[in-house]
Image (cartoon, rainbow over all chains, first blue to last red; front, side, top):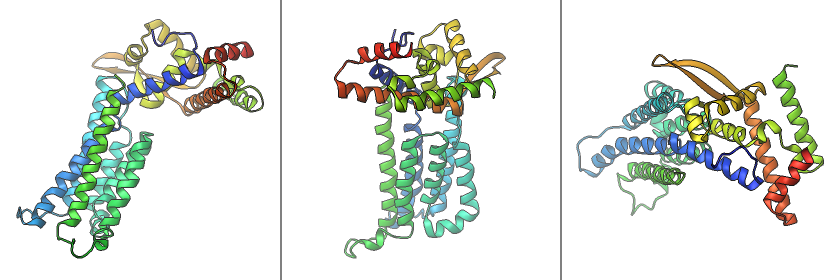
Length: 199
Length: 136
């Protein structure tokens, strides 16, 4: 039996702790589920905006939809972790409820004003950082800061304005948002693969 | 000073001792035990877990797990709460701040031992037996 009573060597003890932690992360889908959900929600909010800007669709919706979908993603994550805690007996949804409330408050109040300048990635960054810190999940917190910062920078057209004018198109701004959403989904898939290796 | 605080104090002094002596002196009996180290690792990652989850993940019997949980609770490293789920009694364990610190200190000591072993070139098993003899 792997987890017998006798103490092993330091290497064995450290390896066993790492293996157990990996198994718990797999059971919780602690890193992959939030990234996949949030990345998909962001893409779903940005895609109609991009299609409208390229002339493919008449459905031109603003950053508020992306922020709203992000808030919904945090709620879904809260419900998912709550269900895991009740049915599988592991984890608690700490942080995602707070992230959802924060995202909703931002979207319907100060967020409307803030988003005009900073864009929806303010909600992405703050919400995911809140959840990551609460969950003590370093990867989520780092991802929140990294993608949140790039997204907010682009919210002020920080990347778009630096592109050569020959490249500049109307759709490049939502395209950068979409790239960040896709990067988040890819990070989620990579995290899921890593979690599955604990089996 | 309450009993858990007293034990936490002893743990800290053992850790301080290890800074001046052999790292093995910093190993804490309560935390170093294989099953209890496993319980703390699971709870540190999950925050909270119920009795059946811990029992199945750590492959333990009810009595064995109950005994280890009691030791950890008495040391102030975890908290046990009782509740109900679908009219069935449910025991939940969660890690305390002291528990997180104790696990961190244990892992730091183990890594220190590993580094020392690499430097001296002796095997892990030898070091474990040396550590046991030093402590006991």
